[in-house]
Image (tube, rainbow, N blue to C red; front, side, top):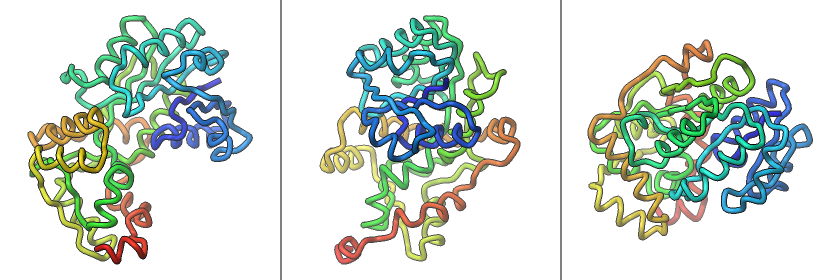
Length: 291
């Protein structure tokens, strides 16, 4: 039995579908089991799971050999919420944890992902650390409204390049690490095949969408104030600020060959991602009038 936590999230959902395509037994866990069942159908076992409710741990982990673990963006206190889940998984006999981490985490001891990795190492669980670069899908989710409604990208990344990766590639590697042997105690730095500045991203989106998307290049303070005005939780805002600062300093542009090596194919390009998800940025009648 393979367990996927965060099964309704961007990466978790793709991991579930990748495992379904492999025909293996999948238990999908998230706060809303009914929504899981509705999304994935009867071939997936849906269970409720909430890091804030330890009573959901044991039923989710029972009989599980390998698990996909992701930290919900809203959880910054990993010692309080994530560590107990890892400990419970170990007690339940889970033999390997595939953790969705962050590229460069080994040099960034401030981010929550580093603390989770260190805890997994300290308890001695076999692991696979997926360390992806910035998700392409963040532009079709977190930043969807500003692109769709204001035709702009408003992130404080300056002129720095980012080696964006499609979530579908991360999930494919995660499913591989769960369904096949040979990936225990490995850390994979996952990127796309190219590093793009946000000006280049805006250009490619403009070409795909047929309208001009502008990269505003805001400073860090303007970005923080905009996010707070929009009601973004402070902890999540600070994590985003840290990630974009990394890009602004030129530290997010490194490209690896791990996706090609592990999957035997090139990573999905940003242009292909934009084509596949272009409907998410199409203005509704109301938003088009607002623009």
